[in-house]
Length: 625
Image 1: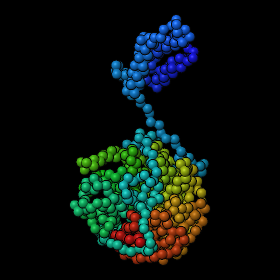
Image 2: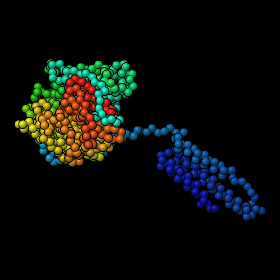
Image 3: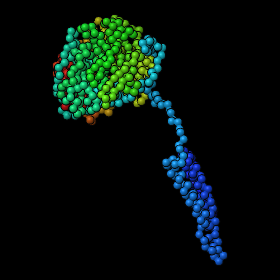
Image 4: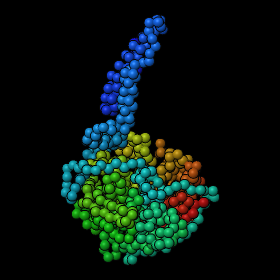
């Protein structure tokens, strides 16, 4: 053994001290280094003692046995004590010193990397399409705009925080027609219940019409007890409420289970053609737009309604000086189903007056106190004009509901253009010419995180010939560039006020189901004036997989219901009052049931129950078996 052997614990202690410094334990490191000194002296004393023992062993007559020096043992004890204190300080902090006051570390949140970033192809720039685009903030024109709290929507699956269908086609991608899955064994439809509606006094508006999709929500217990519903309904666990704004000027509130009232209907007195929306955060707020003037000349407008006491909190858009729509008594309907961006508390609502509204709501919901309020700010909005926009034809306005992907809004307009708008700058990114009046809402198909496709189709209106016939196309568009991927043309007929072509929203087969890769489109007034055709198109090529011809044309949008195993069934209502159940993969007819009146409205599905209204003043609950 040599003196170098005793350097090992010394080096170990030194490393321990340096590690303490590296970890930021300054007091611990200082104590370890301090302990090195008594440890070094103890090691030196130990070495001297060992040398003495070796001499004593060789010359016992000269060197007598003696114990290790008490001084050496004392040095060991001191070093051990310092090491123990250092360990405690390392875990708990120094007991003998107050921690230094530190400033909190402030970091600027970094936006996630922008993957979805539309940029117009050369032919689709606003300039190339001749689009005039204007932005207004606080009622005044601005040359540019940047939203203070950025909008960025998450995935469609996370849009609504409660079970149910909260807006037209379910979410911001407009790709969901049903909540949950259904247990389907008999492959049949049957009427489970029906409820009467009425007619709007002094008008031709009756029952439920286009687009007319009901909203369905299963409220959480706290919110349910805050609602202005009947006491027996408050006590019903897992109450699922149907909220249906109809053409007769009422909003109906029904129990999904049996169609009974959950509260009294709310009479607004203006017809509701659109579907409305519930607040995606689960707040008890309803956003719904009126679709026409009433017999007293009261003009349509957007409404925000508290579902706690059924009071109107806000109405707007019926007298907007910025509107460029000057036909039909300065038309200002709000058929589009709006969307709400949760984080920025922004309401996004396209209007048929040609304005795209974004409104800071300043909403507050206190579930414990049972109160909800809003304090809307002056909208930031846009307006546009195309080379063919006018009063007599190619009207201004948005009648469809918008798709929103992250911060990009996609929508068609009455003049036959399709737009991509950056909601954070309100700038028009690209425009595509789809040639005719577009009332159908688009649907979005994501592809990875960087791209996706849009499916859209117009009705036959402006481009009809003297025989009231013409060609329209179903389009697949690149969501990034606006370019046409494919178009599928159809020869159709039309009639003033009751158009042919595509009035309904396409249905995209659910990913992971047997309908994935299929787009279902209801084309009205083809092959004849009074008939319709449901086509199943290959999303890759636009080629037909199958077609199903109905005796009556359909404005109602097709819907799909899926089993747990992903087997999909398509249901279509037509203007003859028939509800068709089809095998979605083959187009095979499984059943037809006849309801009371034209099924112009679009159904919504909650598990095994479908709800839809008819023009003949009925709302039906349909059991899917």
